Image 1 (cartoon, one colour):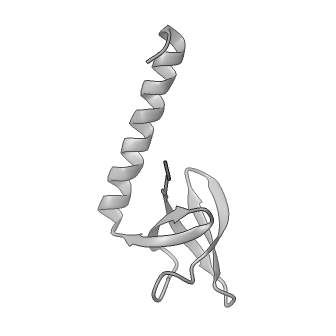
Image 2 (image 1 turned 90 degrees about the vertical axis):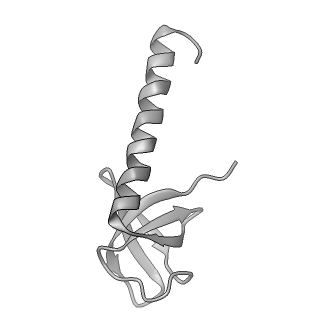
Length: 82
């Protein structure tokens, strides 16, 4: 299974790379697959590449889903397998 993580671009370099952030984690990502990347853009990052641009609403919805999955997993760890 592949997992792409929603992140927000903070800085865009001239070399096709950017700094992206999600929940305090910063990561150097390749933005060469995204047309005209800009700071503040929300993107899906997979294997170090920004592969899709999202609007802010969609990014927040996906992040909320990840938070809920983490909560469910934590509850399962505390009470046994999920």
